[in-house]
Image (cartoon, rainbow, N blue to C red; front, side, top):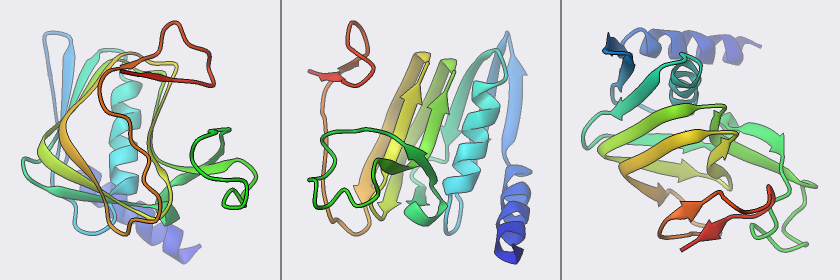
Length: 168
């Protein structure tokens, strides 16, 4: 319980440094570099931007590294078929989602050349019930590679079933 309170306090302190500006119906969130685990801070900014009702841009600090960890990721039941073999899928469909973008529309995450470094087996991004979401200008890197799954190119959500994605 005490560790949770410390993490919550830490996130509140860092979030207080996030620059938020609104202009012409768009809201911009400027996220400073975060020392250590950035999972909670990034998720909180994503939730604020997704829920604001306006077009939103989340800017990461140019050239910064943001580390996301399985230990801070949100466990969710997801039946993702290509992430592990039956022997490796010991958690019965529970996946750890570092950055969940849900219900967002007209949202852009601009990395400005930043790097997002993952630690542990997790899903870096999950986009659910979104429209007009753009992720750009950042690099994904694994801190300790155990299993690599990657899709390059454009991802299309239509017309595919909720359990599949098209990469091309």
